[in-house]
Length: 347
Image (cartoon, rainbow, N blue to C red; front, side):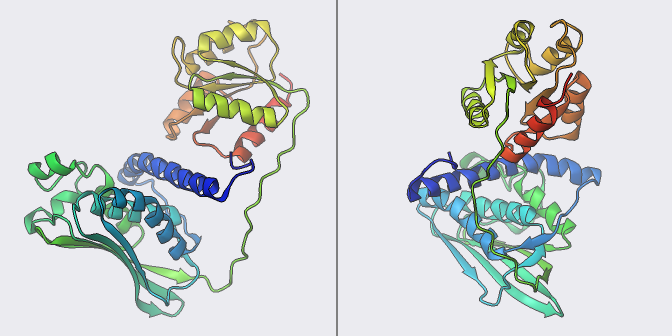
């Protein structure tokens, strides 16, 4: 849709949808990250990051939720904040999303404020404090540590009224430690809470070039035919639209059994196979193809689509006989690259 002619309002809506999609992926990542942290396999990836832009994105996404509860959602930024610092923008976004989202959840009236300020500086490094201040229900001092436990709540009455905290605060606490930061909580029952995340960042002194957002132009394919096995109507529509834009001839089926039958009757250069489908799932269909259920097509390249992004899930697909795995949501460039790699090869 982004590649079509849109009004300014439609572009804003798509931008919000993109942020929402990233947020949903962040929820999935919360679960995966906690597992990685506990296993000692989690890595921080610091790149030049615009802190102000990260804060604006989070506030813009959560503003709708605050508006629904008639809450004021404010942001106070230190005017001395540099243009860019070295930070893991994804994890900073994750921390702020969880802290602000949690504040909105447990505030019935009043306001939620994100305050960002520079506390100290040493050479080319600054210490930045992110404070999330709410006028919510507050937390009794004896329950403060408890809220950082996975899926825990300060008390049962709060759980009934507002719901649980899920993995959010547990993830924030662990991420804060990994980033070399510090997390503090100041709270008083019925008066509100303040969650503060503090960390040191290196200033990026060289100005980053302003990159204009341009439509990606992908080279169309010649005489490529792909079998798509996907049961979700929205995913099916989008994939077929993308393939047609790239001049690819595509047939679509809704389960693994139909995929095998279609493969028996036709020649394809590649199969795009969803993992979870009715009648016969994608992994079982791949195994059957490799075992010769579509005679003469045992070696056809197969790429699976999966919402799961764990290494074990990727290994399971590869063990079943898939040539590659693409995680949803995917980038167009990734899909184009994979099709180029596999569909143009002989098998």
